Image (cartoon, rainbow, N blue to C red; front, side, top):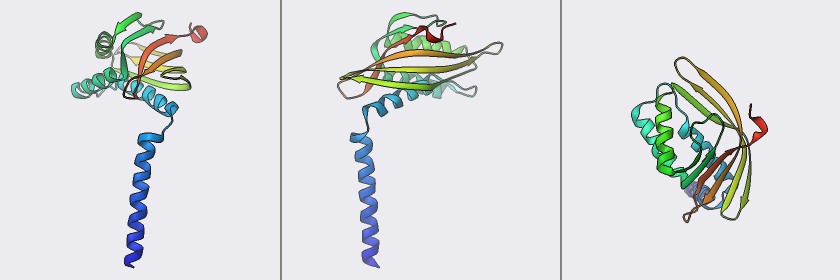
Length: 166
């Protein structure tokens, strides 16, 4: 009975160590990039019951996912061109304040990696609502990322392609 208990404990410890090693070192870069995009979409999204603290946490998380300089080219978005990370996060934070809800999700995505640079060819679905208006749009985008010195993928550009523009 004692040997069985010890063997079960050893198996559990090995399983936990294996999961940690896989999570930390063996996940593919494609998986990390897709996860980073989904996290950025979650950070930008807003629900109607969001408080000031959760909004502040999302803004900080959003800032940690962006490179120092970010280029934006999306129709219907009032900002376009190159911005510093701080300027972009500030603009996004102000824009979120005027919305009741904002839901951004990824419908499709295809990742291409070339060394320390990557592109995501994707379709983004955005639903934004104020008290009087509602927008429901799909955007076909090419999103560029660069890997920093710590191995973290940071967003450098968001460019809409003409495929789905109205």
